[in-house]
Structure formats: structure tokens, C-alpha cells
Length: 235
Length: 129
Image (cartoon, rainbow over all chains, first blue to last red; front, side, top):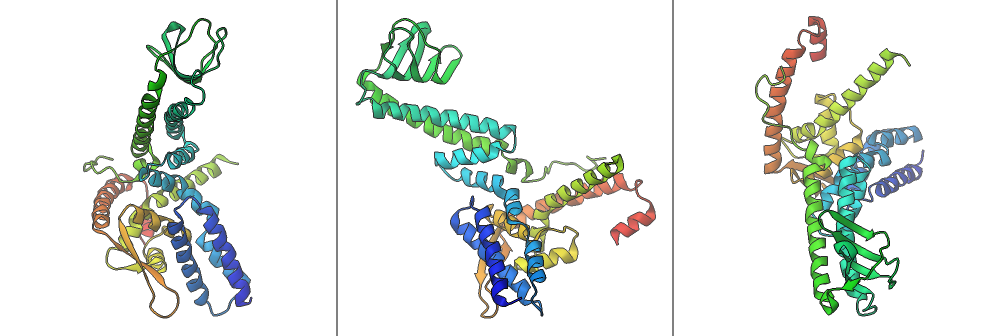
């Protein structure tokens, strides 16, 4: 086997590695790929005779890139999430976590709901100047409060957004159509109130999601052994 | 598939999971005395343990240990061959390893006592060899 074709095989392997570890920050990924490259080349150079079989054997010993990444993806993604305030990164992280178990599914649901509420608040603030009579905080029959968009009908009324009905109803989206009057409560005050609520939802969701990751994430379970094990505890 | 085969597969799976769980400790332990680069760590692990890991796994774990602040690393270009990335333990890496080692010694000692009647003297001797 020529040196060129050996290098082509190595480069192809490293390209797969780079692709498989796309969840890492680019600087970390580049460094790891470079390190594996150095490892593989040192292995190759230690061999007196270069054959295709030998190069393939060396690459096989390093491991299948997709398999290597799958062992690490969830943990690395959540580790990154713990250091970020970006809703996008937190959503992607909880989405990855959700593929591994029920704790992740719950975290994803909480994160989606929280950021969804923040998005409704900000969207309401943004759209209020364009649709002043349709966007607002609406009081509906049965003491239901909804922040969002009213469809303008007086019969079969629907309002889309965040709905709260004491004591225990909370809906992000829309409730079934209602009859009877709707009344807007905030007017122009919607702008500061919406901005404030949006910020509270966004910050609260970020903190809550990071707490869920720290408390229930996979790293939490596997990171450190329980040290309170006393002598003879397993007997 | 026989029940015996299923039991063997499960034992293999358990063994693989167990080795995986010990890898982090073994890698930290290999760095206890000196700075090493990836291939040196692998050689040390191959020489003194039966962990049998895919070589690439080492770099995934080292990357994680670095993110956790347990190891430092630095590229060194000796002027011949390829630049190598050397790793060494941080203070918190040493603390973590001491904690792990204490736990391991106590845990394995307790289990040894529990498992002693399970294996005959000859089997025990061959395992330790």
C-alpha cells in the first residue's frame, strides 16, 4: 500500500470522526481529531511494512467514530448546557437527553413549555403595535386569563397564547372555543408587562433546566462513587 | 438460543459495563506519577489492567476529564515525529483519584470477602495471576 492511499484512508476516517463529534464546540472537536490523527500516524510509523490490512486494523482499534460519539454525546451536550444561557443550546441538549429516558423527556417538556411562554410574551409585545385590538391580556368566561391573540369572534371565541384559570388550569396554546364576552385588561401596559413576563419566563426556564440537568442528568448518576459506604456495608 | 448462552451474554455485558465504569479511575491513576500522552496512557493501561478499551474511547474520556477540570493538557512538539498532547492531573484530579481509590479499596475488599467461598483456591489463584 502506498503512503498516499494510507493517508487517504486516515483522512477519510478523520472526516467521519469530525462529523460524528459535531456536537462538541469546534475548538474541542478540532483538537480531538488532531490528537487522534497524531495517534494513528504514530501507530502507522511504528510498523515496518505498510499494508491496507494494517492501516484498517489500526483504524479499527481506534474505534468506529459513530460508536465512540454515541457513548459521549448526551453527557457532553448536557455538560455544555450547564455552562450556557442560550435557550437554543438548552433546548437541543434536553432534546438529546430526552432520547435516553423519562427524566430527559420531562426536562424537554419543562424547557419547551417555559421557553414557549417566554416566546408568547415577546411575540405579544412585538405584535401589539400592529394588531392593537387583537393582542392583549384577555379575561374570558369562567375567570380564564389568556395572554395572546384573540380571533375577533364574539361567538365560538378562541384566544391563542398562555391561558390560566385558577386554581389549576394552565395551557400553552389554545382552549376550546367559548361563548360570551372577552375583555382586554392591559391596553398599552401590555408592552412593559409582556417584556417583564418574557424575561422572567426565559430566565426562570434557563435556571430550572440547568438545575434539572445537574440534579437528574446522566453525569450526576455516574460522576462520583458514594463515599459514605462504611466498612462491611456490602457484606 | 439456550438459557446458558443468554446467561453468558449477560455476564459479558455486565463485564463490559463494569470495565467502562472503571475506565475513568484507571486513566486518572495512569497519570498519577507523570505526564503522559495518549499512546503512553494506552500502553500503561494495557500493561497493568485488563480494561480492553477501544483506543478512541481514551480520547473521549480525556476530553471529558479535561472539561471537568481533572486534567490539564499541553501540545508538545519535540522536533521529531508528530506533536503530542501531554496530560497531567490537576489538584482536583488528584483529590478525585484519592477519593476513588479509597472507595475502590474498601469496596473491592468487602466484595473479595463475599466472593471468596464462590471460587475454589485454584480458580482464585489463576484470576490473580
